[in-house]
Image (tube, rainbow, N blue to C red):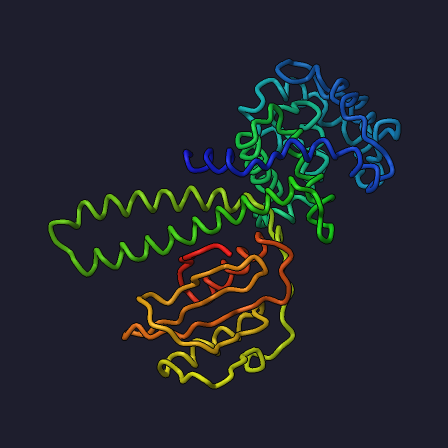
Length: 373
């Protein structure tokens, strides 16, 4: 997608930099640095051959000299595995073409999709990664009917990141994302500049998605209202916007949830509204609008002391770096209440934009910044 490429260049977030922090993250989390390269060498002869996954290979996965496998997983006994050993011959010959069959077969043996993903990750690191609960949870991936589909869903996200950030191997994406979750998402106020760029990129996509959604709704309404000679051309434009929305949604769904966290207000909705009563309501709808604003859990203060004249629509007109938003509530006669809306706290501009997005969506009003302060 052109829009994605443009954002990648301007964002300058680099997921590969997260991989460079992996050893530090592993050391703090597990008190041991995994020797992935040695395990890859042990399994390297399986892919594309008729060779059999031997129990010796499986047993080596559990050795403390490579990593702390036995702190989290178990493998079946040799007596259990010997029933499947012959069928495992040539299992990895056609990877990743027959991956659905391979994953299902291995899951039938090991009864644990994480162990299955480990075997595939070391057999074919170019195409597979370990299904990591912290990353899977952070990505907000939905549960499926079975573990095989859950792993395939997980792989689709890893492969998307591999394409986006030009990783040669999916296994390295897995490591980078795990490190991102451990070092940044789980931390309070990470200082990494690369992570801040990641947050900014997410906001860019959210804003674009929100604006495209509003444009799509407007175009739909126009087609319904002015059906006629121009309907065909408008429908073509609508289809293009619909495609762009789908592309943006795929990008947006690839981002971890809780990438940015805002504090929730402890005030009751009515206690958030501050007014010096020097100006009257521009109309009866203003009170309803402000009460609804107060119901937003992330809104901490609503300050109104000035009315102006301006054109439609009601909108967020300014996003201040400190987090304060200026919202213009505009009635049909172009009278407007100039309302200041504040979050509980706002560390930087990215958080301010995130807050603006949340308010715009909850109030169903557009983001139409007139200036940047």
